[in-house]
Image (spheres, rainbow, N blue to C red):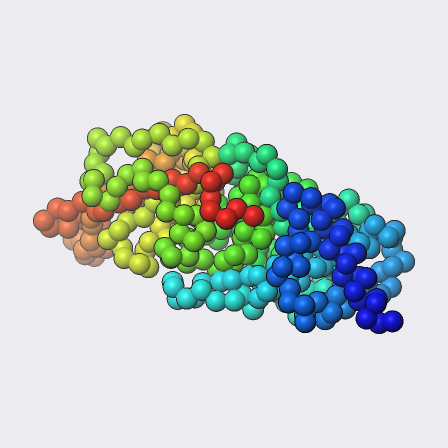
Length: 332
């Protein structure tokens, strides 16, 4: 009898996911990831106990389906992460021991429709556009709460009004906006929950299209090519080596301005950009922090460190690359 109960629970949950997400076939995708020998154990983890008193059959199907997505996509059955700029390993950190209790605590009193919006974070939004990405970025930075880091987040919903996640790095800002736009899902995000360095980002974004090549000095009279709205932009200084490759990541507004967090601060007569967030800073001003003459620190006559051009003068190898978010490899 017990075997029948778990098989029924597993089949009903897989069918519910396929029914609610017929394009993405979330149920079939999960079935392809979970070994047959592991299905019983995971199905038993979907048991709701007294939760049955809180709603209809459809609500219970929805809750089990959300739990199954979290159990699989946040675990080492699917999730990966990068260590030491190169090593790509299973993510054993994002699925917390209390994940089921915490998820039921958040979702247990919500209706089926709301729970489905939580499941929807594991599928991209059909028809999402580059303008959706701009809109998400212009609306503000991710909420910035450390407890709301995206890997393993149990409370995400397509009905969230703002982007969730920590706004501690420029890259985290870009990925939070990508998720909010609906162009990508948490399945895509969890392909590397801690990307770092060129290999990891190439795996997620591809190599991109060069906007400003490293061998072309960026001078005061240089003109940056236009970048369309909704493109992801990455800039870095080749001279800074592997550790400095991460550089700065922003979203283009299409008019020469960008949205970004953890920015290079700018204080000019016609522009002010704070480090925390901008939705109207100039791309050129951010790129100037990487281009131009290389500098070094020297102690001036007043006893303070001062940035001065190296001698003999040498231009840095500044790089600027754009990515079309609609053509990222392996979008899920």
